[in-house]
Image 1 (cartoon, rainbow, N blue to C red):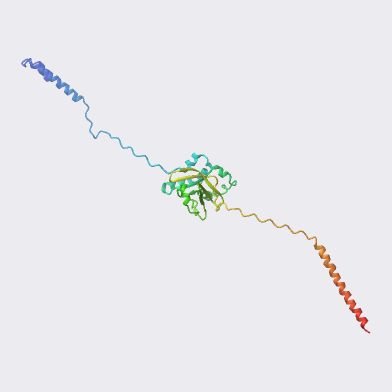
Image 2: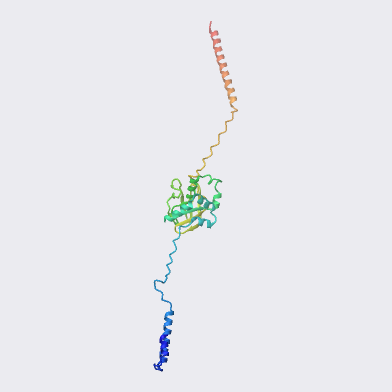
Amino acid sequence: MYFFYSVQYRPHLCPRMQPFILLFWLLFLHTCSQTFCQSPAQSPAATQTKAPVPPPPPAGPTDTLQILLKAGRFLSFVRLMKATHVDTQLFSQLNSSTDGITMFAPNDNAFTSLVAGAVGSLNDREKLEFVQFHILPRFLSISDFQTLSNPVKTLAGSDRKFPLTITTSDNSVTVSSGLTKTSISNTIYTDKQVAIYEVDKVLVPKDLFPPAPPAPAPAKPLAEPDSVAPRDASSALVIAWQHRVNVVLFGAGLYIAALVMDP
């Protein structure tokens, strides 16, 4: 402003120069106003960068319980798995091992063929072994059953105490516990680590359900009295009397003969 004031009120300056000086001053003010009105440039350090999005966590082990519930026809077996905590055991095993599991899941109709109260009569340890008997501690596809060595070991323990036999014929896979025999009717789920197959009968282990002893043979009826016995007895009595009579007669005859021959 001082320069502008000095230009206007100094008559000794050349009148022709005054418009140029004034124009220069206006351009100078315009340039300064733009420079001071601009916001200060942000430093690279102040610029916020978005943090990289972490990758999603790896999926957990397969939830066998949810698979059976989703299928909708294995409620009896699901209740036993929950009661014995086998579902928790399987989750832990799948989380810590790469061997996988194979499950033979009996459907609800299979349980109706059991004797009433058969499973309820088992204690807690026996119920656990009963459920584990339906599960193998490794993953087996349908084609793997053709190369198995019997008996097959289950989660229930020793294959001597809980023997399970698996055989194949054409496209059929037969599973036998020694007391029950059934075939795989459907593949419920498989993911290269877990295989769940549907069976139409409950696998009943001999160690938990020993076969009933055979019924004793019926007792022989008492022999009826022999109706011929009295007749035989009387005949023997008659013969004895006849023998005695003969002896007496023989003796009498000898005595008479002796008298006659004696002069």
